[in-house]
Image (spheres, rainbow, N blue to C red):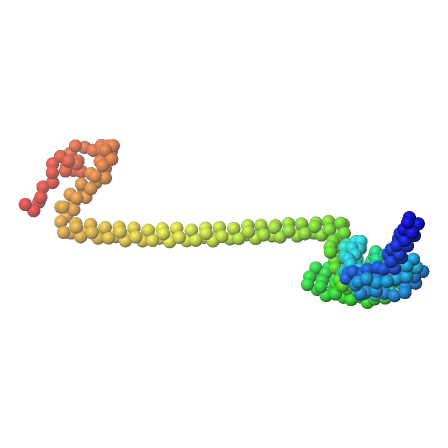
Length: 292
């Protein structure tokens, strides 16, 4: 019984090993090359279960999905002789696994060196014909489209399609950055000094205009006051003259009493005169109505 069972088990194991070595699966995101002794027998792009010759053929799998490669920084000289440190990344897709395998080999990461060379060359050519302001403006999209087209053309022989090339970061070299910052600081200081000078000039002009207006207003006010005062004095003189003409005696009494008020109103005035002086006669006796 045991003798019959052991060969059967061994046979099942052998069949399982052969089946495992003969079958392989391809997912929706993969594409496969079947290689025999280093020679590609066929390419398989359809998803599902497939068969190969066991122990003789091997399977090399490549991605169908987009792949991204970040490239090292490169210093590029622009058309205006400015220098930029460019940090880029490239997005590509393997469109022909057989061509890719023949050009690059079974390891997709091996394409990094080739992409670095091609992208760097295109960056130098295209950016060498553009100025810094072009790279920083809306023209940047057109520049990157041109670079992407050139890289895609050169990489077609490697079985890949370049989907995008992007500048992730663009920096000036440190020495250039320091010089630019110094110029920017000097320019801002110049603008600030100019603004302060213009402000001081405007302040002096406003003060001068205000002082001139004040002088004119004060002069006009004084002239108006003098005119009003002259008119008032003239009117008072006329009133006094009319009053004197109507009743000279009453006017003389009124003027005398008014003088008393002006002198003695404060309560501290001192007047030294002779007792017989006519000026004080109304303090000694009330005025007499001459009309009676």
